[in-house]
Amino acid sequence: MKRPRILLADDHRLLTGALKSMLEPEYEVVGAAFDGQSLLEDAERMRPDVVVLDISMPKLNGLDAAKKLKLRSPALKLIFMTMNEDPYLVGEAFRAGASAFLLKRGAAFELTDAITAVLRGGTYLSPEVAAGQNAISLMSPKDREDAPKPTARQREVIQLLAEGRSMKSVADILHITPRTVASHKYGVMALLQIKSNAELVQYAIKQGIIAV
Image (cartoon, rainbow, N blue to C red; front, side, top):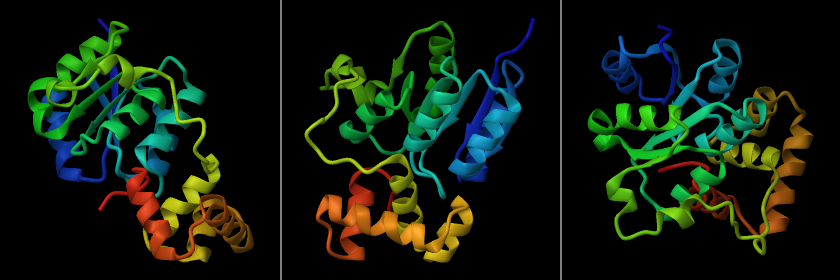
């Protein structure tokens, strides 16, 4: 019988190693990506059934990576596994296409249950996250339409700049020119009425684009 194919994505290598040992041999762990950009490449090459990913990852955060993954492979199941239980980020994860959201501290007990649930077409939410919250509303596609939102490319630029990279480095990673990077940066600052680099970093943290 063919085992479900699992791809792990987290920048903590010890954790992905431990998860691989835990999941095999029930599942086929096809690989581990350590940043969001590598995740996109690995998913396209390895064709997993399920991706287990963190929100906070270098180069491209899990939320934006998830949106790209679902556009390419709508049937792909996404399980967010993170330390962050902020209700806003939980909602964003499901709006990005997640089928499950669990906390790292409970992964040893919950991950296989979450994988089983999503492969059967269901959803899974850690009890600690669901406690005191309306899980149905978290999974709803309703969004804050009245709030200004950067484009997907602008979010990528924000993340890389907020990680401390130079405009040239960002340009090299995204295969665009430094002038285009600057255009995206100042376009976001104008859209959000942000006046300094410090405010831009604060925005990235608040939105879950990067984590402290």
